[in-house]
Length: 305
Image (spheres, rainbow, N blue to C red):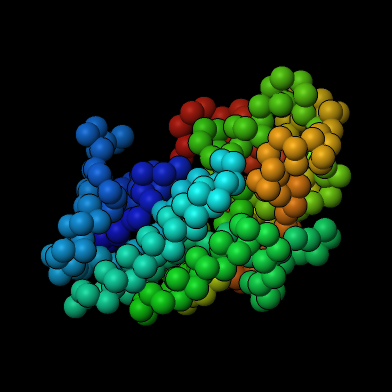
């Protein structure tokens, strides 16, 4: 099988590429500029210019995975917000154009999205049937991202609503862990806000699951089936790392330091991956404690199913 990956040089994309290769598939990464030294062998690269100029040359893919998007971990100035939105909608529009112009379009497109589309929640738990209620910049961004994805003329479109992807290296988890390394961990704000999370191994496995299962389409919550609050996440992290969970960070301090970006940690969602569970997906790390123990105690090498 041959798969085209947009955003394949990123945190999740690299892990997905390795997993595809490990099961004997071809992984093609579409990028602005191929790396001079690929991080590992077997990956094939194509530029956006090549793909746009001659889409027929690159037909015959069995699926497309679009993970492209500029990092949200930056101060949300007006220019940064514009880049964050444009990086997502533009890459999605390019995928739609490729699908329209090739005579043999891939039958499935898995397009990244975000769990923040549901809005903010305390005890409420969202599943894929919950209506979108964007409550901040990130929620609005995800709405525009999914609207762009809906214009992709795919036989089967999957929209992955992704939470915090946890891994030993890469992503936001190392930053969340840092205060605990320094014995200064604690709840953020009141700690009641939901913190949707998933282990990187399960994130990659569910993308493969969505590619392979022809009966899955539409929104898919890419989160673990054990929702927790920010305070519960921190207490569990302190437990597995042998560090105290005692130093709360006031909401006012974060708002002063981070501005609008503070909504990333002061608000959140609890969500369930109902569609994945209904289709029989088996999580390797369904519970937070076992996931964090694996991440903080395992060797550097991650094994994918």
